[in-house]
Image (cartoon, rainbow, N blue to C red):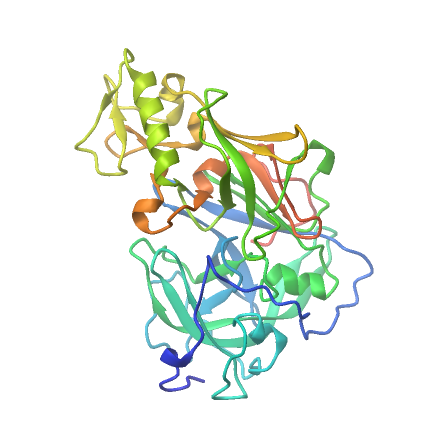
Length: 410
């Protein structure tokens, strides 16, 4: 299944540059009379684990795989015994592929490439996905059965396309998982394929907590009238972004406006461009004067940490010393939607008992002017990506308690 010498010839794509194809999936529609939803339980945390994962059951008979849910990339892939050239530590045996390959000229293959692309082997679709943190996966697209439980109680076995990754280059902070669950806007994403088969609406949502949370596809697990909505950026067909944001501190604007903001569940921490980051650091340090906190320069957990008179046990011990941050999104005339970031959603407690800032300088790590909302700042909120209406929404939620449904995928 491996095409020797083809790696350097492939058109590469990255989570910031994935192309959205306008062509539909070639999969046949599944005879389900109406849309439903699919619910996954999430495990993990921002700190100390640094990642979340969902269990997805693939194959016949179905076998469990732990996948990183990533709204910043399209393609779902599993570490694969094809055989594997380079694979990372994983909780389960490598996926053993079937011979059901996605051919090179399939529309799903086209959606992973920009413009014209070559087919050195017409019988298979090679892919290479590169991530902003330096990790990558190389392999071929295959079809296999995903065992999915609808919230109506119906259990389906659906044939979906995904990556059989037999050559992985891990990032420095690569989690020990079986692969990635791509939740981006492209046609290769699992939810797009399910939507094209008539199973769910093209809507993704997640709710992250300090102990896990839940992920869902579809629209019957929330009340849209209780959600704060902001339109997705019209000039971004590749990522979940909202434009025209103003940064706030303690409920007041700080003079940093017109920020473009990406929502990315594949990132543990949040990132601001240098100007916004320096402004926040300055405001926090000024606000901490006279309070019983001092900079902890010896703590290298994150770039900015503070110690108290005694070690903190949880963020609840220190939140009273910090003001809330926020992003105020402007859309339409005098319409604003506020995304609040309380101290619980931007601080962690290090192993030394210090409070550390979970918002980092994105410009310093190569994100240039990108501002990114990661897992830490989406905790205790239901965040919804409505690809049909072109909007991103959020509302406060108890993410430790999933919405009522007939079943989970465990």
